[in-house]
Amino acid sequence: MDDLIAKIVADTGVSPDVARKSVIIILKFVRQEAPADKVDDLLDALPGSREALEADGPGGPDGLMAAFNALTSAGLGMMQVQSVVESFGRHAREKAKPGTVEAIVASVPGLGQFV
Image 1: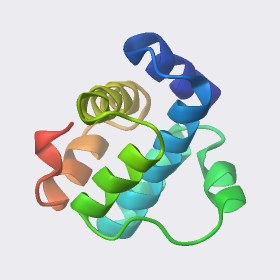
Image 2: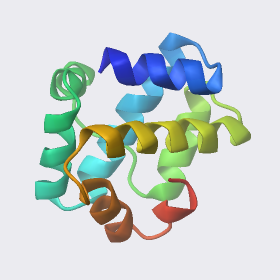
Image 3: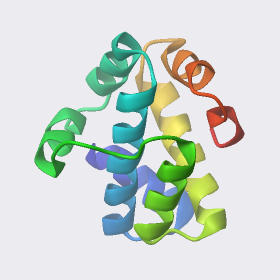
Image 4: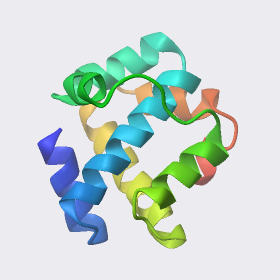
């Protein structure tokens, strides 16, 4: 997961701490909202992601607006949310099985606006 965090920092200029918090929020959101098999494929493609989720504890944002609010509470400005999510999506597409990210995005209403 460190390479994902580094990519988000490089792409967006947010701090590593904010990038890490953002990644965990995004992962918790998709874990709750997207098909479990696709989320498992995504987590398998992002080394350290399962451990980060486990260390952060249960729960997560319930719905797209809650995820947006959690990201802004983690320190992102409104415009940075889109940049961070786009960076996450690009990295996930590079690492995950073909079609994994697209299936996740298609399964969550409104997510396509951000990824």
